[in-house]
Length: 67
Image (tube, rainbow, N blue to C red):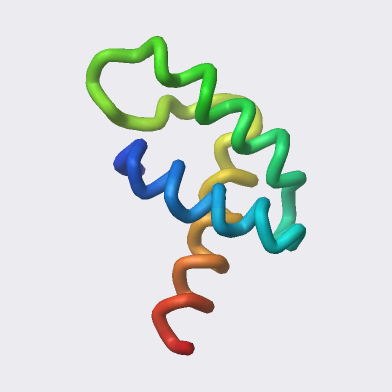
């Protein structure tokens, strides 16, 4: 699964600003995102913590879409 980096940034910044946790520490996932700024293709790379990132994004995005 490839997730657009802008979507990761937007959604995780909102998640972290609310101080919510959904299976991973927002700071940890945001740290992962910011490290990926070095990549050129604009997509998240799968890592050991990727499943947590995906889990956080899915639950947060689903919650936001059905408000």
